[in-house]
Image (cartoon, rainbow, N blue to C red; front, top):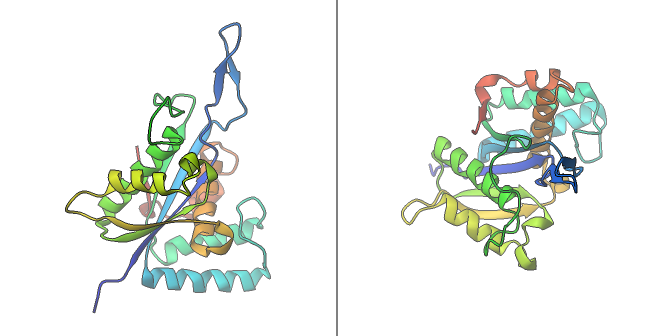
Length: 224
């Protein structure tokens, strides 16, 4: 039998903006950007993707929930049931959490010729590279939550895609073959990625430690 197709679904929590600017007196002034930025990658083969769709449908029916599944609007009990799918289907999840208060890298393009937002592009590509290497993937499809900031000079994502291909693939190893920028409202697996990002955010900000603890640690891999 042929090997199943592999997919990576990526969502984020927070924003890629710089959290502080220098005021006229030289002191740091909050910009309103989030202090944390979390990128989450859910890795599925075609069989697990089908099973995930089935499990999500059952939970939707259980709670009579018809809207888009978002971490900010679903009941806590439903949230926990949905996160439990990670354990029941043994879904590997890779995430990169950046505390922007101590981040030493760049936040803006700084005149870079290729990137729209060097902070976002660099950290997302690092996550994809690590996940594909760890899972030993070849010719995977990557689905990323659509964000207009990734449209470099309104090129409809082609500049970002080119950067990601170059960062992850080599001349002899094609780890990712296709990249799609999607609206999470229409992709169930992306909605699960949003839930995991939200659970990780609430855990590290101490807002809610329960949700993160639903997921078995053996399925979570932190990218440093």
